[in-house]
Image 1 (tube, helix red, strand yellow):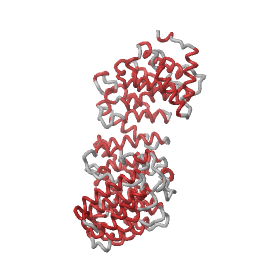
Image 2 (cartoon, one colour):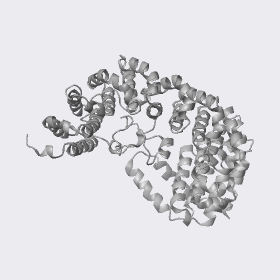
Image 3 (cartoon, helix red, strand yellow):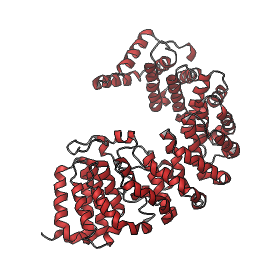
Image 4 (tube, rainbow, N blue to C red):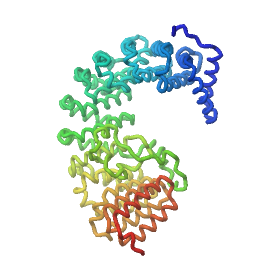
Length: 561
C-alpha cells in the first residue's frame, strides 16, 4: 500500500512554500511556520509528504529537501509511536532506496533519519536494516557505499550497546570484520567511516572487536601516514582508546607509536594534532608512563610547549585584539557555567584528582574559557601539567632552557605561552622551581601591567598557582606587591582580566588568610568599587571573592576601620 502513495499536488505546493518560508531569518515568519507545522502534524500522511520532498523531489534545491528531512527527523523523535504502520513503512523503504542519493547533503540527511528511527527502538522492528546497509557497502556505486557507511557510523555512535547484545543476535560478529575490510578502500571518506565505526566499540571492549584486535591494530598502523586528515584523526583516536583498554597489545610497538604521536601532535591539521595530544594525557595516567616516555621527553616537551601558543583562530574567537571591553554588556553565552576538560580524561577522572578536576573550578588550567571547545592549547597545557606530576623535577631539565627564552620574549604571543607553561608545571615541579621563584615572581608581577590583556589575564592565573609559596615568604617582599597589582587588575578595563584577577585573588585569600588583615581596608575599597564596574558574569566571580575573603579573615571583617 505504501508504495502506491502519491501526494496531492496542492498539498505538496503548500508544504514546499512552508519549507521556503522556514528558511527566512525573520522571527515572526519562523514562529508562524512553527505553528503551521504543528497543525500539519495532526494529519497522518504529513510525514509522507516530508519524505517525498526529501527523496523524490529531485528538482527542488538541496537545502529545501534536506530541511524537509530534518523536520521529519524531529517528528520521528517526538511522534514516531503515533505514526500509522503504512507511514512508517513508507519512510523506512524510501530511506533505504535513497541512501545513495547523488547529493552528499541528502545522503547525510537520510542517514540521520535512519539512525533516528533506529534509536527509537526500531532496530528490533527493522530487521532488514543492518543486513541491507552492510550489503550496500559492497555496491560499486560510490554514493551508495558512502551513504550506507555514513548511516552505519551514526547507528554505531547512537546504538553501540544494543548492537553488542543478544537482542539483535550480535550483528557485530559480522559487521566488525566487514568494516575492517574497508580500511584499505581507495576512498579516504570510506576509510574514515570504517575506522570511526570500529572506534565506537573500543572502550566497551566489545567481544567481536577483541577477537579481531590484532588485525585491527595492524590496519591502523598501515593507515598511519594516510594523506586524509580525517583518517589520521581517527587513527589517533583509536590509539588513544587502545592505550586505555589494550595496552598489552600496544606495548611491543610503544616506541614507534610514541614517535608517530609526536609527529601527529605537530600535524598541520589542528583536529589531528588535538586528537594526538590526547595520547599524552592518557599515557600520563598509566603506570608505564615513566618507563616508556622518559627517553622521549627531550622531543615531547618542546612540542607541548609549542602547542600552548594561541593560534590565530583562538585570538579571533577571544577577540584578543580588544583591550577594553568593560562597558560592553555580557551576552547570554558569556554567563553560562564555566566547565571544560578533556573528553578522554574526563571519563576517567570523576572523583579523581587532576588539574581539570580540582574542587575549585576557578583554578582552571587556563583562563580562555570563552573558547568553549577543548583545543590544542588547553590539551597541551593539561598534558604538561599531568606529566609534571609524573616526572616532577626531572621535567625541569627540559623545561627551564625553554622557559628562559619564552618568558622574556619580545613577542607577546610567545611570552604569554611561557607564562602558561610556568603555571602548568607549578604543582608537579614546585620543589625544583623554588630557587627560581625569587626572580620569577617579581617578573610576573611586572607582567600584570603588560599592555596586552591576554598576557595580564594568564599572569593572574599563573601567579595564583604559586600563591602558596608567596604566602610562605616575608609579606613585604612578595605578598604585598602581588596583592597591590592584583587589586589593580580587579579594576582592569578588560573583562577577561577582571575575571582572572578576581579568581586569582580568591586563591590568594585562601592561602594568605589572616595575613591579609593589615590590608583589609584597601581590599574592601577595591572590591566595593568593582561592583560599579562589573558586568553580570564577573559580578558572580566578585561575590565569590568576597565570600572567600570573609571565610579567610573571619571576625576581622567586623572591626570598624
